[in-house]
Image (cartoon, rainbow, N blue to C red):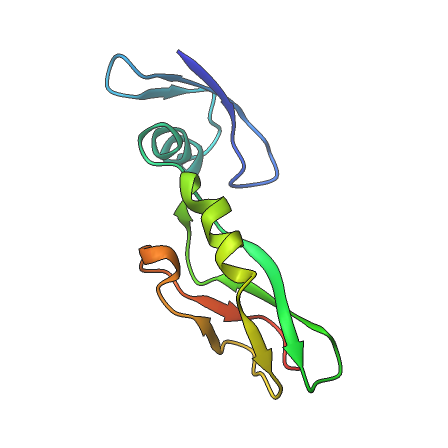
Length: 114
């Protein structure tokens, strides 16, 4: 039995997931908690937010994020890949900064116009 705190909504339900009998979830107050509990044990993922270097603009760094969740064990590799990225202004919100980061099938996109 694994214990988790659900992060899908502000309620922060304390979940117990039985990983020996089909990933039964108890303690959730909504269906999202049940889905989160299962996913967290079977295939945990996270969104990544960071900044990258940017020249020629009003700011020295541009905020970026993943376009979707990446496997949790790849988060540090994704952040390390961002160290090599240097943008040149203008940069538009939603612009793909790094496609298919670390072979995850997820893009890194800009979250601010610079």
